[in-house]
Length: 394
Image 1 (cartoon, helix red, strand yellow):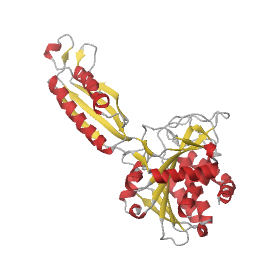
Image 2 (image 1 turned 90 degrees about the horizontal axis):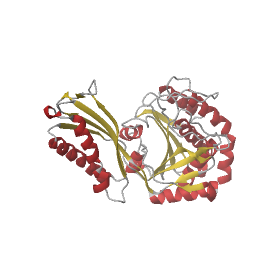
Image 3 (image 1 turned 90 degrees about the vertical axis):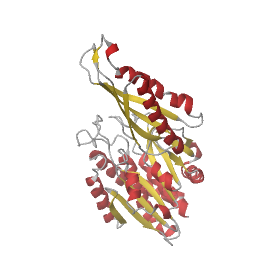
Image 4 (image 1 turned 180 degrees about the vertical axis):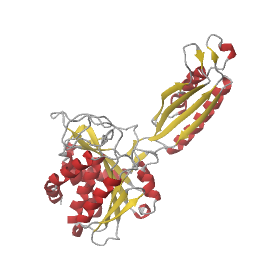
């Protein structure tokens, strides 16, 4: 079967390349993937694939039923939204939508999932069970398309045995993939603070409550969360990435200062505890200087935990399919991904697809204006995803 799937992935490569280039040329932002969804629906209808669209927004769930379809149900997922970035690549498939680009490779994810679907559709008499191919919108923006598809009631996650997804990895050479069991990617919360004081002349601070001074102490105090409260075995990052104040000159103490930041960790109970630490530190720091700090924590994506047994199997199957030399162990990442929502409710595995090529100078990282891929990755991505789906039901 390995040889059959590999041959089919090569056979459909040109077709998939055309699809990926169309998607790359016509990117759409999160919650606006209407034309992308329509394009995919047309392809599914052309190949007579059963599907349901408009799930959790513009999401699509396509279904492939093998023999004895009720025996077991698994999911394969690809996301399809783009980023607000102006593309600088000079390629025939350059984005035509001003300020919008597939800079995170979701065009690749969608194309590989579609390729896996078409391969598995040809082999549906060779496996038992049902495969749901989840074309997911809005990964890049809260609350995340994964959460909306789960809440829609149209994705039967309680009946599903697993979900598998992949993500481009430009620092890994094309033809290779990477896996990590257990903790893999962090939760991500957005932090917003308004610090209120009493403004006045900078030469007379005794008549003011300086919110900049409060902000300085608050930022320092927040770092005790990671240095004094976090245990060494739980990665934790708290970063203040933005500070602004209302003020017009070097000799003015402003009335207010605004801070924004991000909180990342890999343990849900500890994550909740951090929120309480933040609020307590804000209140105590403000009281120390007779100011006020209002805190807003926008809860984002949860931790992404790869189920160990499923991930071990998928890694082993990837070694079968690609060769052990082409499968690596991944490091922890403090970046976030809404695939994590699936890992919270079912066994799931999220792995990385090598898309780089140093010899061709295809090395730009994701979320940059020059990100691109070696399109041979479509062969690996579609074929391996199909193989992982097949092995779970064979």
